[in-house]
View 1 (cartoon, rainbow, N blue to C red):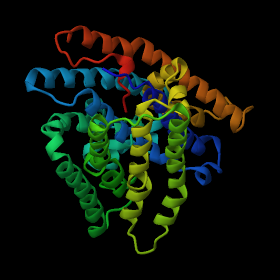
View 2 (view 1 turned 180 degrees about the vertical axis):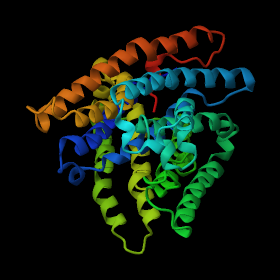
View 3 (view 1 turned 30 degrees about the vertical axis):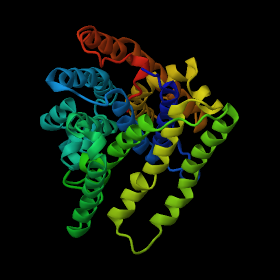
View 4 (view 1 turned 60 degrees about the horizontal axis):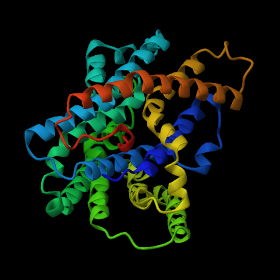
Length: 379
């Protein structure tokens, strides 16, 4: 099975974009939103996840292979998620005083079970480790994947269209019922929860990645030299960057509703450029993809999942203890927080994530679909 190391390395940059986005609220970088739209990084991960899973599991034949697939996904995300959740509860002890109604046994159970994004309710996806909402959404995709991949070669267009219809339906619901953007008072239904966080609104990106992988497997790779492939890869990167001003123009259209603007800004406008970049980088023929596939970038890509899970907790800890870091401002404090996040991410990857994967893989040797950790870029 071909390795897609370039996509593993690319994961690190996508995670870093999200990390910088969350840093701006704590370390005061007002220039960040004018350069790029970091919130779109999550969309990239959803597309990447659909691409990688379809590449690795083009079919799932019977219950044995399906259960092996679900076990491998469970081992990939849940242990690291629990470690990050425990870290958040330890470092942010007492931080629940602002919205005590969000912190309850039911919301904790939802977070542990990774179903907190399925309700669209603020009190479910906001507390503890808020970034884990995307892992909850991914969990829904994993459960749907055996059904989505069934006969995918003949039904991909139906499933892609249906998933887009689901996203548009969520936009319509929020617009028709005037759902508030975010209910922090009562923890109720919110537009953010339905359009940005709910699996039904984000399934389109995942299925788009699946469709791209199906095309990629069937597509005869052109015989081009490294220089031409480097130009193509550069054009794919430029397409992603061009999406920034394009998104700005789209969300300024006055006739669009607030839910439509939210969807366009967070996923609708970036999904296709992300797909193009992933499609091209997966080929691995140009200098950009070869750099992304280097040993250093692959290792950074492997720990990017844990980095994503812990960075928000670390940033909140710094923000809640400003007196401790009074001598630092802006960039120096951010670099210290980033170093702490990277260290914690490596430790979780080394002692939780990788061993859990190995343990499950050791119990699934009879399944031919078992993948090596370095070959599975994960959301």
